[in-house]
Amino acid sequence: MRENFKTVTLILLVLCSVGLTYHIWFGASPLKESAAPRYEYAHFVEQYSRKEIVTPSLIVFEGEEEDVFRRGEGEYKRLWKEGGALLGRLGRQTFNRISEAEMEVLLEMASSKTIFMFMVPLPVTFFLPEFTPSELNICRIFIIWEEHYYYVILEGEEIFTRRVFMDADEQLLGNLRPRESCRHLCLPDRLIFDLPGNNFLEPGEGDIVNLGTAGLPVGESDGPGLPIRDVKEDGENVFCLKLKDNRIFVPLDSFAAAELSLQKEKIDKEELVRAFFLDPSIARLIEERDGATFFTDGEKGLRIYPDGLVEYTAPGLVHIPPAMPYSAALQKGAENLRLFGGWQPGIHLTRVEMQSEGYRLFWETFYAGLPLVGRRAGTELVINEIGVFYYQRDLYQVVGEIGEKGSFRPFDEALAKAVLIYRESYPENEGILLGIEPVYYFSVEGMGTAKAVPAWSVSISGLETMYLHWQTLEPL
Image 1 (cartoon, rainbow, N blue to C red):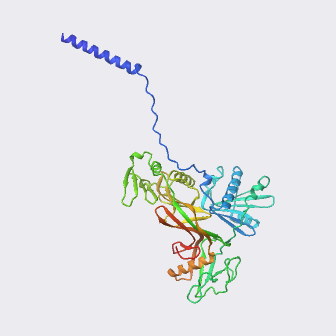
Image 2 (cartoon, rainbow, N blue to C red; image 1 turned 90 degrees about the horizontal axis):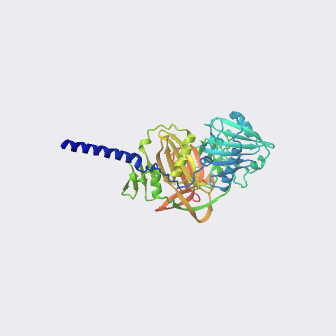
Image 3 (cartoon, helix red, strand yellow; image 1 turned 45 degrees about the vertical axis):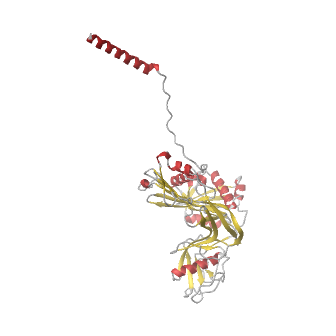
């Protein structure tokens, strides 16, 4: 009896096993394939083209006079658009390699030319994808024309040129002539200041002397705009300011500006967290005592301060060697700027540094041709082959002008004031001028609000950059 029970039980188990197996294979409807998880990047603005990543620091037209146009000016935008269109027409044409001496001959023979100058070298493939060598980085583009043809010169580690006969391009070249006047002076390689007695003259008393180019006697000049005074170069009260860069332009004509009202840019915090962390749920939120909000997943951290400053670090990437090409670093940097807050209007890439941890990129905001500088203004990003190691963003948007416009004090008065400040720390009779330009210098007034004051930015070797009020010349 017991053996029969075991046999029946075993038969039932076998039948159940066969039935379940049949149901699994043939009885149930097939399961639908699940969609693979898809992570969506948060993009704040539309993607920039490669042609918009690097822009000229200056556009210079040399004819009877020198006209200079800066970022943010309407004429600058028009000239760069026309210049980019001209380069695009030369995409499949062959360029010839020439020497520096041959380039100088072409430039000397030209009656007029337009020059695009790049502080951040422009990868040639951004405009000419089929150009050889593809790794050429351009620091200057010359467009010079004669009666029946024109030359395009690309100056970088090597120099290339292309001569094109005019036909349909003639109107295009006409568009590369400025429609507005913005006269500038290219400073000579050294400037002499006359310091009577042991005191500096107050700005505005003719205390700057132009030596012209090297070799000219004291008191002579080959350029307009600077008062001349007969002084002895080796006197005790004479100060010599030498130029590090022989292409420093200063405005000759009077120009006006007004203080600006600024407002901190508004960034969606949730969108920003999604941009840095593909899965925001794994990011731990920490409220800090200073009011900052800190997000971290244990490997990278994002800190958003109450005043809107954004800082991001990924220490795990710091030891990765920067093996990526220069052009790829610029493109990836622009893509990440767009991802991490957006590429706002008026932002330009102004500096790129090669460091051990990667490429360090800097962006600044420009308004009416002048950059907004001071404190930690702008955006900074460090990138390498693996990704972004460091990111800081502190951008303000222009709300409007405050009060009436006032004229800038002349550049020679600003230089004289800067020399006075320099001599307080260095009593020597000479210094090296690194740069001078008009800027907007901003100071924070309250949470999220600020104002920018027009100023002269003067850099002399050995001192931090000086910012001098555009009307009083007092240090800011």
